Image (tube, rainbow, N blue to C red; front, side, top):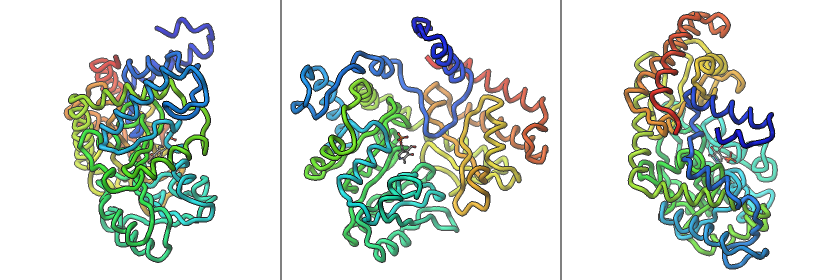
Length: 420
Ligand code: PLP
């Protein structure tokens, strides 16, 4: 492979092992994807060597002409993709993007209101183990017990009572559409900023398959490496230019130093790819595949949290099989299916062995799997989890013949759909 040029044997062999792992397994982790060769080439470019503190046309370093070209292109393409008025493409990651928003708009001790972690929110939306929960007064809203959909009435109640300076919508394990207009109305009524974190949904939003928060939220943050299929990284965008200026100052010098120009080059390439008509077909296939997988699993007796999905991810409650998410993730990894264990809303089990698993279709759709393939994947998951159930949840006691049959299916699908 290209990596044979690498003189560091330890790292070269680990890279080769990762290539093999990706090629021979199916990635069903909802937050992962397969970036194109063009994206990876841009990221592997000489821009890794360049310092470009500041912004295009106003840098603190010399020699930034080429850097300005790629950063301007990335910003312009991102704005076109999401109909945004301004964008900052420098955040190193999704966490950094959110941190920059907090630094721009909040003071330590201010109140922020985000979706509860166990209901699908992200750690940075107020979890006590992060800056967002430690340096701010973080309060939460939840989903409704009956239908597991976001409880906007509760969001409104908590916002009226707590008067947060910032309301955060978006999350990592919420499979349904978010009502951004309703959230903005609540923010306006209670004097809060509204931030939408679309890290998970960004590619679907760009393709028109999931609602766009840009017309509603004061600030939109995202990662670029999930459904958007770019390099690992973050972005921030919005409409109000005054907020945009504050965000620029918050990203640099507020929370970051030199931007990762090689990653920004790769972001620019990924945004151009996402602007192409084929990307709309891709994003629609990601959603259709997730719905086919969800249907198969629920037909097979598992329970879908919220009853299904509007996007690329599904949260599956394993309680009907009396098994937990950790054992399920362990056994599925043994047959080449990589997934996340995940808590479900109001989970009675502990986070390390929760009641659920989270599955996603972006990666396997990128290598060409269609709805029929995903029904087969779903059937394979069901057979493995049924065998786990028959083994009373003990991974080591699962019937080897079932695992061999599952490995055969995975191997056939991965050979039929190689990563190019
Ligand atoms: N926001 C949401 C909703 C996420 O799901 C994630 C991903 O884990 C992040 C932010 C953080 O992104 P990163 O891992 O790039 O820092």
